[in-house]
Length: 145
Image (tube, rainbow, N blue to C red; front, top):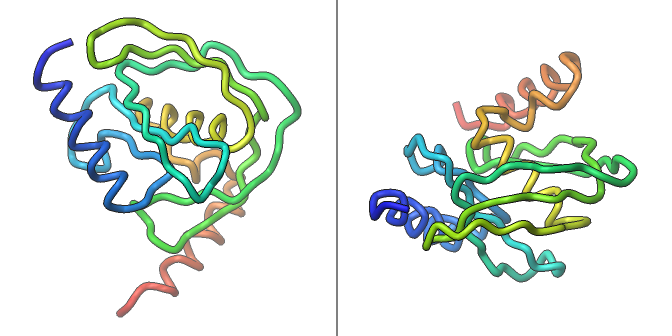
């Protein structure tokens, strides 16, 4: 793990904390890097950020659950996204040690959302074209002119 990547991780953690976000991917701070930060707290009102370097989804399990998701890229927009209830992820820590974690419920959703972002998949791409277009139209109407 090099210092530049560690610095992105620290900036990302600080940005997530400042925004009160559930998670962020490096692209949100203008960095193109395989780094994400997620909160693994079961309580949605608490944040305990974990920085994931080179994150990947190893497996998905459980019934798909539909729940609202949003992004700091489009403040105020939320859309229902269906995702599996459990996920197994792998990631490197800031020292370069590889870890495997099993997550479920909200932390699993956050991990899937942010790892998608690292891989260039925005959450709206998980919606049907009609639902995506409606969500974007709703968001545009909500923005100041």
